[in-house]
Length: 478
Image 1 (cartoon, rainbow, N blue to C red):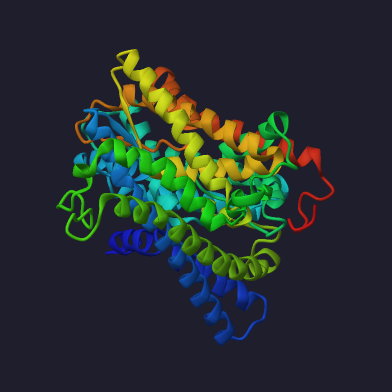
Image 2: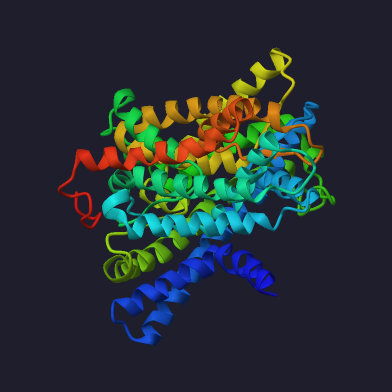
């Protein structure tokens, strides 16, 4: 009975980001001394704001995922998809096949408790961030447990409790250390909004921010491009997004042909020749990119405003000096053109890497996933643009696209043995840090994830040494 209640709490509450973030806002407002009805209003606005964000992100995925899949099908590529939900599906199916799916909740709770512990003892750990992106927490816990189980045990027997515990502590250490690592850069990107990124590319965003200054000029932002004459229409973010996506994605749709988009069970809500010309369908599909971006940004503004204010209660009264680590999409509102840059140039990088794999007759072929292309590379572009302008916002996502494909292909060479495997996470950190962790664990054993925990904990200690005076002050202060 208690185990069932625990599993339901993990999956139905901790795994639901809108509820989790709304509750955080509610508690924060109460700790600030607000009246209960004011705290309840904060819960509602945070919940609704995040749901609006999810409508935007879900719309982007549902609109463009079929295009990417059709592109792969058109050219007869049978491969693994680098997409968080394909990676999660692989993990849950493999773990379920060995009666171990319930252990994902254990991993998640151990990781979250460890994160809270490190923040509570921040004077020693130097960790300031609380990772509260619920759906990402569950997703990552599942994928890491699958990967470590497969390379350490893979016997067909249930996962051992020792592997579960090690996975939980490693996962919590990653959440804590990497979200803490990106605090200062996120403060620069968001003009001191008081949160950090808690997602799939925290290490990647930090690398992008640091590398960008050596590549480009931060004064030449993608958001400050002023075109003369008729080109001035590109000065409007919505117009620019529609035109660029129509030119870019529309070309791909023309290559695929209208037959790939005819409405069917495989393409629900697709092209109906009786209602549209194909050209009109292309334009409407591509214009939806700007529609969903606008929806996403509306949700971001709503829930970030509530969360940033209310979390001060938790930071001041419960976990002093703590900073919330939230979804990467919240950064998009601070550089509206960057996600489009990241998507387009990341796509070119992934496409080149896929062609290289085909030319090399690789045993593992990769299908690009939209979530990885847009949200991963879009986030990297936001951070790159802040410190290196449009040049960095183009080059870094292109390089990331190469890394996402090659890194995922490498790790799948050791994970593809089970027929339930259909893809890998594919996001930057999972094509680098966790790719390396999985391969090294395969070669050297359980000592690798165990040793990584104290090694990662060195990073915040080094951060602290660089700016002791302001390290534990409110992160709105530079």
